[in-house]
Picture 1 (tube, one colour):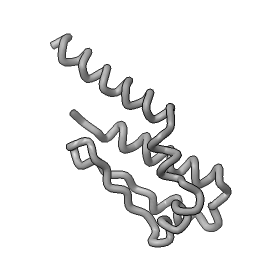
Picture 2: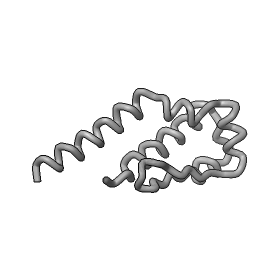
Picture 3: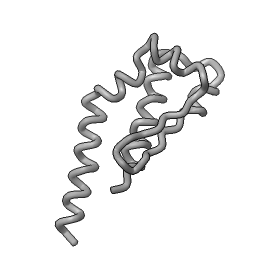
Picture 4: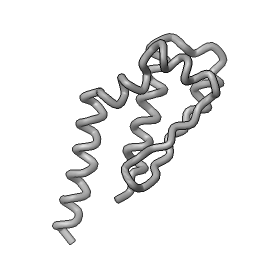
Length: 88
């Protein structure tokens, strides 16, 4: 399975949360956010070194990973994979 779609969604949602929380000053943080799939269902998130402090205060990652939006997106990706397996 290609986890890139989910990684891209997570990255977009993190960036949206940063903007929503008005944490954009120079854009450096936004540009630094990268989510890379490990192809085992895990994701490596890289960002500026001060991101953990902002995340601690604003609960950015918690909000993303507990969101209904991400849950529904993952379900759609998995369903598409299952449908693809049975159509071949």
